[in-house]
Image (tube, rainbow, N blue to C red):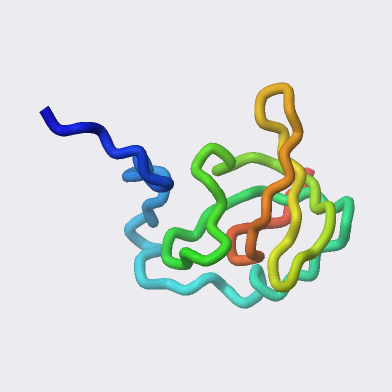
Length: 99
């Protein structure tokens, strides 16, 4: 028997996959150039083509609140179970949350 992988991206075969009509496309500049302010709600939507600033798979699809900025990336506060965690995410992996 082969030991199961325990890497950072294990079990992401379907989560970090682009749909057929999205393959080869870079993220639209309109999404990348959005300037988020502290207190803004965002959806964590990972783009698998860009590895830098890619959040962990457990945060995929979660809604969080922007807390601050660190370089090009944003600090996003996300609820993980009963605990709030602050993760560092690049803007290519974020979408604005509209209620």
